[in-house]
Length: 472
Image (cartoon, rainbow, N blue to C red; front, side, top):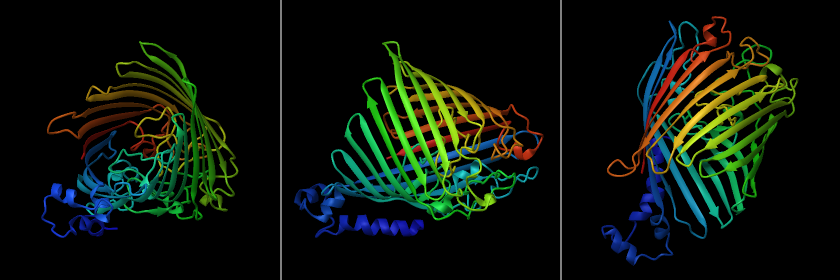
């Protein structure tokens, strides 16, 4: 849907009922007093509009003769959700984006023939030359709510371990489907969902599940050739169920199962233990295990076109965290992730970020096996302080970059450092604004074989973001 079409739809469906009164020039306070509270007009007038504007300036600086990139984007969106009527609500929202200024994101680096990786994600990865026709219908749903459960049907936001907003660009990942949340008490949360279409971040279209594979890049298959699964996936649906349960005051567990029909199944178990608590701080331990199984032939009977190679079998991942948090807002985390030397851990990057505790923004460990990852993160966030930030350092020991069987993307081992700083304007004229900065440096610690395709936008690179948000 174009921005013009969306604007007309919004006007017809929402604004018109607000004006279709006997005398549209009556002041709204007088109009409310005379209005029939059981009417359709009251249903729409009692709803809530909301808006979001966002500007992101991004730059990537590669070593030596390799190409640098930059881009600045601006976008704005508006949404509306009706008031409840017989427990039903309807919501709609849309967003447009402009490329204000950027490198030529459609031209690959001359030395490596590799395309831009980060900046193009601010706009449309399918069409890097598109600078202005970047609008997307985002929410379009109907919601039914009860005291203990909520059912939401249609286009909407989502957050699960494997499908999530991953909103480090201009707009997040969205889905179309049916999502049910059931919370019978404060200790139990059951989440069940079916996803039939997805609109990944950095795109402006809605895709059937099969067509969403490979939009960000396909890497290498286990035969050492360029993967050919894009456009060759079977018609699929995503089904998931997740249970989060608190056991007493110190223990919590979560269990998730996600099935992508005809392709693969993923299971996750997470345990959280509160080891100690005092006036000085709280000590917690986290443990996560993930197992993946191939379904059928992994998406295609031709191994070169399959998403997951059935000959490699199950993939296993374990991740742990030790966390100490202080009442004054400081939190320190030590993290470790181990991917077993079995099948690759795979999850479409178009769908969301890694759930591993060692994750640091702007890099992922999806697509590998036989990995050791370590990270340490210091965070600060306090409700009474408008400033927040973090410092994270990680060492990621990957299989050799030439090992296509275990290393899908030809990525050398690396050390990564992240620094973030945010300021949320709490009061006054600028209330609602948030400004933030992210700086990332990745240094190669494994063999690159001096291949530019193993280096460009991957290692020996500095990347930064300046982000300004305004919510109203």
